[in-house]
Image (tube, rainbow, N blue to C red; front, side):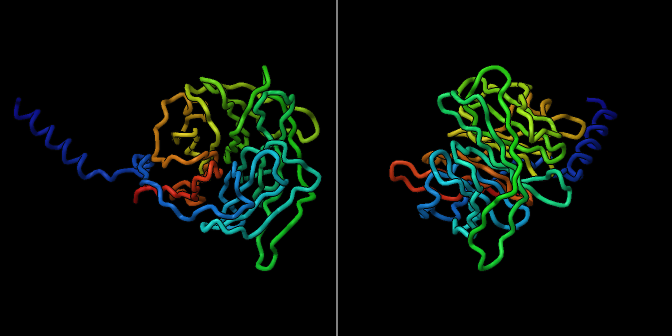
Length: 295
């Protein structure tokens, strides 16, 4: 080794050791899950969707799937229900996922509720109900949502079961992921989407995964979570890269405590970690679990 090369390597090593590590380099570092509360409320026995509230900081929205009342619940980290909202004149055929984010009025946050499940692939149309996010006030335990938009669509190609609905907060595009095949397919409804016509969600890509049951964008739109029954997958979207370009990369597997039938996941609004919870199944205990990002 020449003296010149040795000096160069020393300088390079010093530069690397003194370089401040960018937060993005640690974005994939999460701690094992912490059980926050056990699910005991009989109104939440088939939780299929979970979303962090923007209008009610520190709270989460949850809903049950097929055959249950047409209700969504505002819950705290103890799994106590603070507010029950009924979506007027709408049936819960198979609600499978929920998202919170921007909508038509940039000053408001909206709920997107996905009537997208179809176990037998027999329904020609799927629906997403969009409405202004309700705000909780002490003493106000119930609300009825009478004003909402209905986004009616079918999938390009054949009918499929889907359980994952995601809203890109930067573009307001909606993404739906198929469940029961391998690979699963990605479908997109580009904003603005009509609430009067029947739309077709375009097939825009696939993932070499299966049994995808939930997903979520981070608030800044730079991170994506997707959940299968036994895995949590994670992607980052670097500056200058599109969502679809990012999803072509191999995802990282994040910490996940196996649940009886875990079908829901959401980011914390501040990006500090992610929550999961499960349906009750065969008498097994279910919990609200939080996976914190390493400091």
